[in-house]
Length: 120
Length: 120
DNA sequence: CCTCGACAGTATCGATTGGTAACTGGCTAC
DNA sequence: GTAGCCAGTTACCAATCGATACTGTCGAGG
Image (tube, rainbow over all chains, first blue to last red; front, side, top):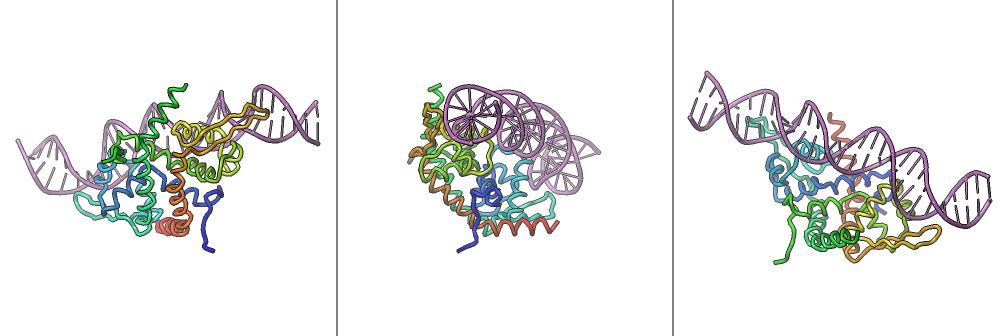
């Protein structure tokens, strides 16, 4: 018997974790960092349209959760590099499965939506 | 070459879908419905602490996305049964992987958090 | 000399959401 | 007769999201 949380217990921290790793920006950040460390602007540009404030919040949370490391180089101009930790890397597989699902089933969902909307 | 979305395109609907299926309540609802159809209160009680309004919103969204069907029996007291569609069932595997990850790595994350908080 | 841009963010302000508490109607059980 | 079940809805409030503007330091260009 392994020590293990239970997502159906509202007081269990897995609830928070599940919400955290299901976060849109977190998912995209993990997928981008899959191929190696990136800088702040590289993440921002890779994600596309994200306010810097929100990206900072996301990355700080991920750092706190032990998913990424944040290395600051005291240079001019400043350089900050984000790297996946082993814990963060272990998320790549589950998240890739999820994003694959989203990409593959997108047409089915959009048609379901238009059917639903047309039935009103 | 299969028609397929790209989560890194901000204009692609996969963005929305990724956010939708990563939603806390959606994940829990899918996991609960894995073993068969459930009624509204069964879902509410299974999830634990969710406001009825929020659960309704979640279920309507899932219905619109084609993940669940909503059957209303015009009885007294009213009875509404939610069932996973094949599309919704195809989400079970990815989501189970995610929730397993959360349950297994919960200790690692909580220790990472306390280390981070202690370092301030 | 003076301004412009890069970088990694912060500050500020609305708009949008997420969530809580209270209410609905029709019945049934106490 | 009043209390509760069922599946929600309504009114309201707090937290969050997102867009825009700004910071400080430096090198490059005119």
